[in-house]
Length: 212
Image 1: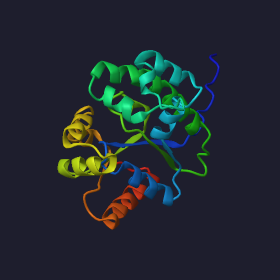
Image 2: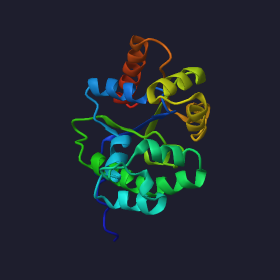
Image 3: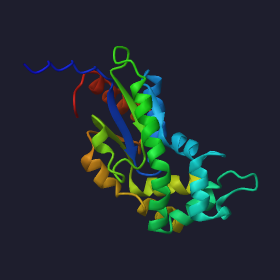
């Protein structure tokens, strides 16, 4: 007789949070944290991947040259951003360096969470759909706003010209396509209270195990 299968280990429900650049993902993530949901930020993991002394930083310098470094040897993200947002192949090369670290660290983090304590946990992944990672998650939340709001926020936040801001937005999958694929959408055009209410609605649905 065949050996009986071992029971599957229960795990925390894995939820991805994504959206467009400057559409309010970080604010939404913080709101979920305030409700006691564990979260992890891929931007932080990406910075760790190219920290001083890392193999990731060495690979970046080998691919893009020492001109992307500050005087102290750390990565100048603004200089590198100017290169990769103007060149598709350069952007893909950078993603190939950073994303394996981010993915591995995210997997390790989810594995540490207690499914008895937490109904779900959230990974904030800006390029979720662009790199095909949506299949790694049980549900996807998209933070979205109007195109004009996104453009204005990005220019204000990063001190970019309109042309540079439009290039960065164009480098990502169109926001409406992300919205169409999402399980939940949180609009961030309105007041902070309106966003908070939507977060609360999604939190209750995910806690109950419901889909949108």
